[in-house]
Picture 1: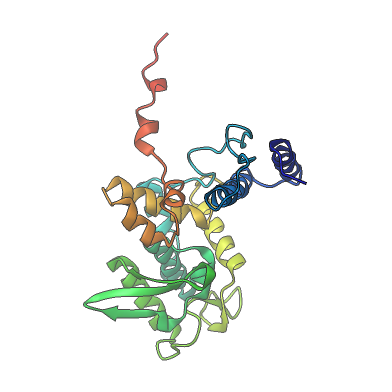
Picture 2: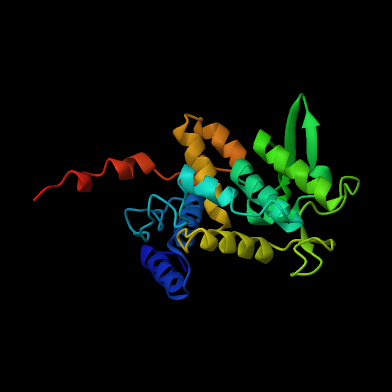
Length: 261
């Protein structure tokens, strides 16, 4: 049976009924559209049933769903943990790594002590990303300072194969009675960020991913080229990087602020 546009439209509707996000549906239809374009190149003579002329895709907002932080909010969050406790020293290092490397929560959870390196005078962290891809990200001096403080406080400098960030031995001890040898989980990191965001009164929608959005947005506002941002974030496609960038200037200059009645 040949595939017609109404088949593709029915598939799109079925995906929506299954609860898939619009972004996911658009990616699937784009992939199907690309397949038929490829087939046309090699002899297929029919029309492309997934072409936008025949099948509408669901709307996708120009900005992603994850909210970003202002530089002031990010600084408040970075300084929220108490540096007087070992757990607070760890948390300050975690937040700084997220804010200054734009890494994903899974990448942070996978970091090992030995992933921190020095090359050509630069402090870097080797990030193990999606699909086994690796990238080397330079570390901001503040992140280096906080990471060094954490490694010394935890006494893990020689454990190069061990996890960089670890759970406390007991919740009440706040790290004073040591840390486990197991890595801090993704869920643990997510909870940690939520707890600190709540403690300083930030939007409840702030997540670990907000650091990634904030880093890419702030770097873009400072004039960093999109190709460099793509490499920094570990994205395969620069269009993905663009979805992370929030146009704060566009909001500030909205016509809504000049209306007078």
